[in-house]
Image (cartoon, rainbow, N blue to C red; front, top):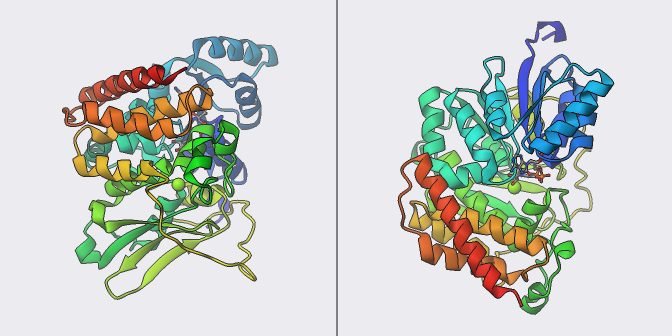
Length: 399
Ligand code: NAD
Ligand code: MG
């Protein structure tokens, strides 16, 4: 197709100032004829958002923090940029669901991304989903909203993007019919893969965020160190692909070259491989069903060793907690997610040691799992209660 024939996709990027947001804009900038940026959102990073406004000229820039919005508004006015600055969380939903927008990159971190992403699902947008916490908290509700509106859901998480690529294009969620036996999620094992339990117990936030293969936001980096990231991804896979828990397997693959695999009834295992660079899954989803240039360096396989090992749930109990929450159903995954968010923030602040993350999640699940989870209000209430229970538990740990 000539470039002149392409109708540009109109994009809102939630979480534009984060790692996924920046990578998304990098791919977008390589294809000025394909994409138009309608809105960018951030929370507090005024300088980075200003820079993004200069480069990408969105119609709207949203800062969820009103003070940051005021600062940005002044800077935008001083430079004479034609960007309207909005503030607050309601504005996130406005720019995610605006009628002009056809594609949403959902890349806010945590359950904070849920309301706007769910609203976009209800509005029938094409959703590029990086914000895995949305699916963990509201899986059934979110997938029902996608089905009801006819929205299109494309996974950005590298593992799920890999599985999406390795499944038949017309996969409907019926494993039997598609001859799919299992989904294999690869895990790097994170920065603590080879550490003893004692060394993990003494780990600092700086060690936890130093991921061997990927550059990511702090929260997901800590999740990778605890293997909670893989646990959240197991729950994410359950909803994205309609998998039963026993059809989802986790294998540790420290090189992060095989991004995940699909095992078929005939013994075939189809893997997607590549250089660990989030621009690959982002470009795949942005261009879908076409393949577009992503700026990613070619995979160099000569002389590389690819290894695989079983995850160790004794040193990394968070992975098992996620499987347990999935088995429990109801509000358990929302509780797990909220308790984890609170514990990770406390750990990053230096207030609690690393093992307190798993301990506080287990405690919070014991206290709250089993509650109602039928409506968004139920889930937001589970999230709120879990934050308060985890907070109290962690507060009592302090010296
Ligand atoms: P990040 O911390 O780098 O960026 C987070 C973004 O969310 C920022 O733009 C920030 O301004 C915004 N944000 C944070 N709190 C907010 C709030 N309360 N309200 C509104 N906006 C808020 O995180 P990231 O690494 O880009 O990850 C984003 C999401 O993508 C996460 O859900 C993560 O699990 C997922 N993900 C990331 C990667 C990766 O390689 N970074 C890979 C797979 C999935
Ligand atoms: Mg991932």
